[in-house]
Amino acid sequence: MSDERSQDTTDSPDVAGSGDDRWATVKKWALRIVPVTLVVLAGAYMGPRLIYSFSHESTDDAYVGGTIVPISAQVAGKVVRVFVGDHETVREGQPLLAIDPTDYRNAVDSRSAALASAKAQKRATEASLEEQRRALAAARADLGAATAQDSLATREKDRYARLLAAGSVSQSLFDHKQSAWKVAEARLQVARASVDRAGATIRRLKAQIQLESDQIDQARSALEDARVKLGRTTLTAPAPGVLAQKSVDPGQIVQPGQPLLKLVRRDSMYVDANFKETQLHDIRVGQKVEIDIDAYPGTSFRGHVASFQPGTGAVFSLLPPENATGNFVKVVRRVPVRIWIDSEADPSHPLWPGLSAVPHVETGSSPDDAGAPVASQMGTGRGDGPRQGG
Image (cartoon, rainbow, N blue to C red; front, top):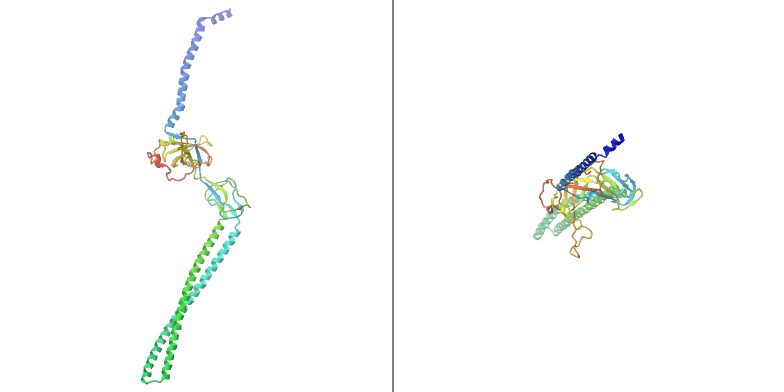
């Protein structure tokens, strides 16, 4: 009997109709609620991004850059020691490698001896000059005495000539006075010649001293050059950074200008972002930039727009476009924009040249020169210099 009651209940038209109505009602409200929910969720997800896009310009054609210092040999020789390894962090002035200094040390010793010899020769010439100056003083004194004697002999000769004409003295006495006058004249000429000779010797010695002074300067310059070359046998880091592309080992013969290492500076990181020309309208020097690095998802870096390249990248390519020839197809060009990184260095997120980046320029920010046309900012920067990056 119970089975019959249950079957009667199930087959009842009122019960079946009630179940269909409830299912229809659920479907009706589901068709209303689900689209509205999706619209709300899409708005909540896309709304902030849409608003963000109105006040920011972004590009994924951007890469981290930095100062890469090539380190080359400045003198020739055999490498006797390498103090660093691959990818090692170094400080400014830290020794990197040493070249055999034997030849350069010998050159320093030779130049030192040459300089000492030139100085000794000059001192000897200066001593001779002092001696000649004393000789000149003595010659001038002799010239004064000879001049006085000549004057006295001349007066005596003239007086005895008058006495001889008057018959007061003999011819023999006059001849004696005349001979004394001639001797005095000869002594005067000798004294004058001695003065002239001493003066000429002094002038020659002065010229020789000047020549020796020039030789000393040349010897000193040669010695300084030898010392500089000796100092260049030890290569040091020109700045703090990390070494890359090490291509030198002990025993290798190197030549001047031969590249041996590259130093990547960690205090001058920046981003070169290639924005489309249609994105440059609202970008200004000094505007704030948020930088995402592909290597560090979820980590952002702060920066600012530093400068614009004065021309598109195509203009500076190896084969620039020639739009005046052939058929023309308009292509949106890109302009490199330099962005300095302002964030402090983060050892856990180091930045290296070549990493992919996505900068977001906050065009709504107000730099000092906001409102200036982009063309006037081409190739100019803030002058802040590089900041610590990453």
